[in-house]
Amino acid sequence: MVALRTNMRNGYGPVVAGAALAALMLGASPVLAQLEKIPGRPMSPVAVEQGDPSLFSMRVLTTGLGNPWSVRWGPDDHLWVTERTEGRVARVHPVTGAKMVVLTLEGVVTGPQQGLLGLVLHPELLQGTGNDYVYVSHTYDASGGQGELDRKGKIVRFTYDQATDQLVDPVELLSGIPAGTDHNAGRMQFGPDGMLYYSAGDQGQNQFRNYQNPILSQLLPTAEQVAAEDWVSYTGKVLRIALDGSIPEDNPEIEGVRSHIYTYGHRNPQGIAFSDSGQLYEVEHGPSSDDELNLLTPGANYGWPNVSGFRDDQGYRYVNWSEAPTDLEWEINPLLAPDDVPMTTEAEFPGEITEPLASYWVVEDGFPFNEQCGIVCDPTIAPTSVYYYGAEDGGIPEWENSVLIATLKHGVIYSQPLSEDGTKAEGLPTQWLPSQNRYRDLVVGPDNRSVYIVTDSGGATTPLYGDQLTTNINHNPGAILIFTYQGGE
Ligand SMILES: [Ca+2]
Ligand SMILES: [Ca+2]
Image: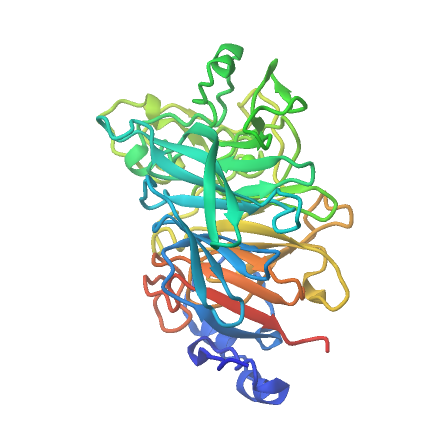
């Protein structure tokens, strides 16, 4: 048994303390008490319940990773992690935290939302079938170093060589995926249909420093573009890709053209995950409101940027800065944009769209976006990944048939209950596993009771203690945190 570290600052009991000590320490729920003490704590416009922290122990497995982005549980009983800004893939022992770097990629372009992003393991990895494949996605310079930096994304297959404990023999499956300085998403999943799924963001166009560039999430490819392998329209899309990188023959035809596009009209879809029954859930960052949980169906349009969240014309208008006079200064609140910036209501959009299962959160016109404490106080949760939690004996009953959503802004996991058939969100989510960190991705171990969360190496989040509403102090930067369920025994 290795020595177990604890982090009392976060209020969680030591793993070995047992229920009695945990109850003594946490009986008064110090975490919750502190949260409640913060005046005007930036929270949702609706009251969100907080799960009982005494149900989980917490410990830090390892720290110092370079902005870990994806975490997977491997058939070797190790955690597989991408380090976004280091361009590395590592295997981490889930008890000792010992780390083995199995890949250091050359040619990764890094930045705030760029670098080595997605990671999936072939389901037959280390099963003796020869399919010992590991797939990664990353940003690269398509100019090849000749001239101006041309950010694009690519998906590469590696073979895991167990003898050398290295990822070898890269095969490029798909390259030239649009990428930029913001909103690259980059999450990957291996579908139950044997296809790769990849989420591409809208590159943060129409806002901040990119405010004069158009959002292309509604742009669909022509047959000529597909034939020419021009993937300019693959922005703000979820792609479905055959294992050789080709376009699957049963991909949806959208407006008469079949491409890798599975769904469109997305903003920054950082989370995609399949349920046990094969339904595909997605979470994406909204603008200053309306983060979304979606159920993806082939060929569907999820509305961005013409519709954000539900089609309700509340707190959002599509303000198209890319067609505004260039001397105007960008304004974050869409309802305060000058009159000469083209603006359309959600009702005015002529297309069919699929509404989300849930929006976090809907606010009315007049909400003071960005005024309370900047982005952290806006009515969003900043969802970075989604994970379907099924119902199994010995699992966590509080999470049965839910999706778990990792978030940046509140240092919590939200558990969102689903309807029995998985097609609806039922009621409000509950906050769990609080700490003062930005959560980027999570995986549940095979015991169905241990939750492994990777954290950003820095950035703004909600403080656990004190009177501040936002902080850049992360308690466990670049870490893997383990939360273990202590209930139900
Ligand atoms: Ca949407
Ligand atoms: Ca809306």
